[in-house]
Image (cartoon, rainbow, N blue to C red; front, side, top):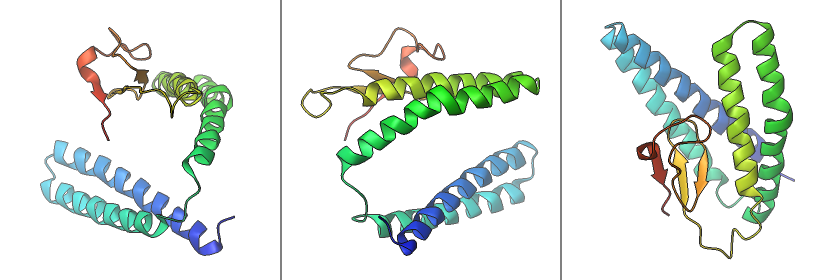
Length: 164
């Protein structure tokens, strides 16, 4: 079980990463509105926060569990997201009449279901798979790029092969 310091470092990493993402969004909006100084400031803030998040990640390296244990927890979380969390969020968006949010949560649900399937592949360590990620929605294709993304309909050129 992680100690309190490790837990706090994980929270700091998540908070800094989320704040950096928000600041990149605000920077893009400011640039679009010709507020270039504000865009520069928000970009600088995002970069600084990403550095802090990376520092927290470096601290946590070596303090994480074995990948196989993480894999099973991740599969369980993705399954819960696909079957419980995102359907509930989609229903909330539908009740609020927000079609954009409803469509986004429906896509998240489908992608999480795809991730659950990929993570459930029993031969992941022994088989030599190629992984291709849709850069539009996050769908993961095994071994071949589909003619179009089954979640968002993206063309093959929108898939990125994962090499490590």
